[in-house]
Image (cartoon, rainbow, N blue to C red; front, side, top):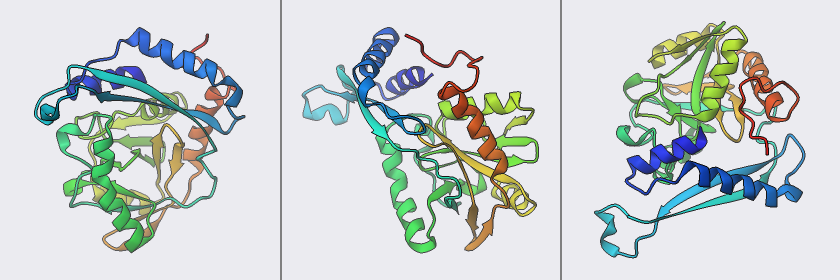
Length: 258
């Protein structure tokens, strides 16, 4: 799914599209070569494939590149998830994370366009991240997908061009469904989010590195609203990481075996 998303991003950016088989073979070979430096769980080897246009023409700012370089970065990383660590989100309703038609594209420019609001939120509110909700439409943070856990219902925005189609998001929803949650992929507003949190709902961020980061509070209209619990989100995270670490059956055929 990660390779499919890279290929989709390449098409939407008008870059040459990497071949799936060659891409996967390169990933596997890199992990093979890095085997001796892969740390023990819960640390991991973080993989970051990157695709850049390489046509040596200054005027390419106005035309697509016919050639591109695909390279893969690999780095040992520690455990991104720290139980009990605060995750305060500032709810931003005036600005979007990036241009709406670019949201589903995995590219550095989308992250860069959100930085100004993230830095402002840290400075003014001590927030860890910004939850972008243009015109009150709850979407995602600068670097992660977002979901609301309201009792046994998980609510998250449906797949549109406005936000990133996270592979971890998909994994979490798949496992949560098997755990008995009702999955509601629908639009929802800041007003609904605020009311649910005030009545005891949980909220989570999903992404490659942390898998799931439970949200501990929101800043909405200048007021901080605490989240009552992180229990459900933490349990779903464990269900995902148990598969990743070989502690639970991989009945979804997600793991690559070589």
